[in-house]
Length: 253
Image (tube, rainbow, N blue to C red; front, side):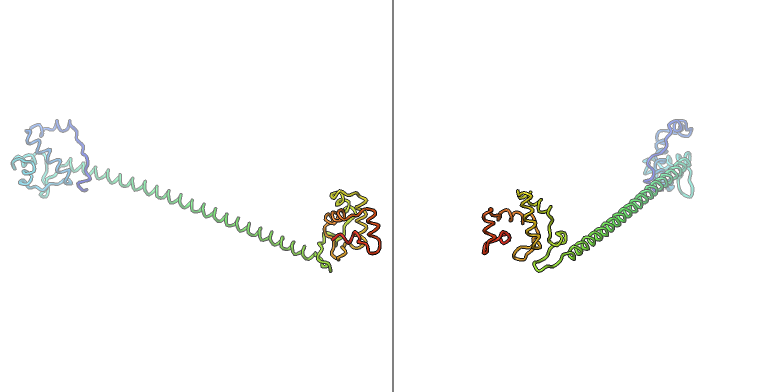
């Protein structure tokens, strides 16, 4: 154990005061004994048996230092030692080793716990990412299926459009033909009577729901408004039916 490992020592006043050897010493000898004890603690329990050097440190004669060493200390292999100092240094080393071991165990436990938590979080993130990827993939598949259905529906609708010399007419107009009820509904919106709606229906139904220019009638509401706007009075009708007259049907463009 190095010098810096000793921070404190046990000091029992009753043991110090009841020691027979210390009681027989004068103040100078007691000071030398105390100084040697402290030096042993700071030097790992050993001081070289050099009376000249030790006397200089203790600031006293070599004889006094030698007497104190012989009364309270031991000389082993040329070094000054003390049993109690050796025991306390060994005990301090044991306590130090236990503290280091306990600290290492706590650190390893904490590191293991952190590693497990990190691993668990990584797995959770991976599962969440995988789930999100599957969800996105499923959404993409559904969107593709929807787009395919929409495309097929559009193609089907396009295939249902029939060509006529006058142009294209959608199938839901039933090839451009309207019913009497369609005419009545359009007449109601245009402010015309059912009789006028019947008149228009019979007129255009007889000529295949086409205008005089050959184009088909595709909007019954617009056609009814034109019928209303160009509807002549009774006298104008008679005149329109005369040779060279302009018929109502010719006015609807």
